[in-house]
Length: 79
Image (cartoon, rainbow, N blue to C red; front, side):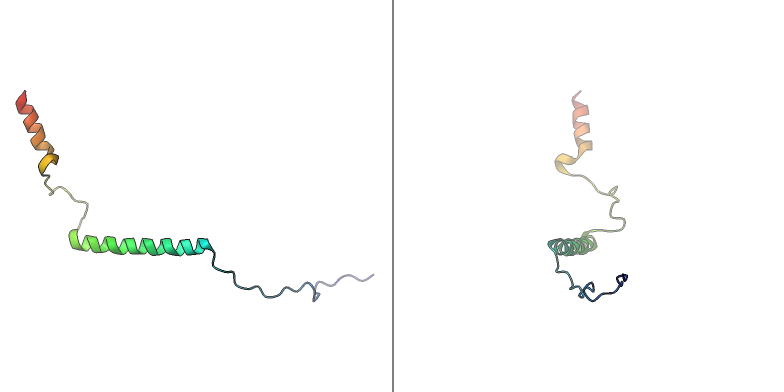
């Protein structure tokens, strides 16, 4: 009895076609575009209003109802 050969024309696979784009690939592309757009818009906003370092707020002065120092002074004068 003969051994089966490792190559047979019946077992040769046809070349695989490229897979279609799935919904997850489209969602990945849309989220990437949204993140890039958000980064660009944030950079533009910081160029317009920000100054290095943007997180330094010691020079900011509160006004109106949010001026807690004035509220503390008013309440301490009542006693």
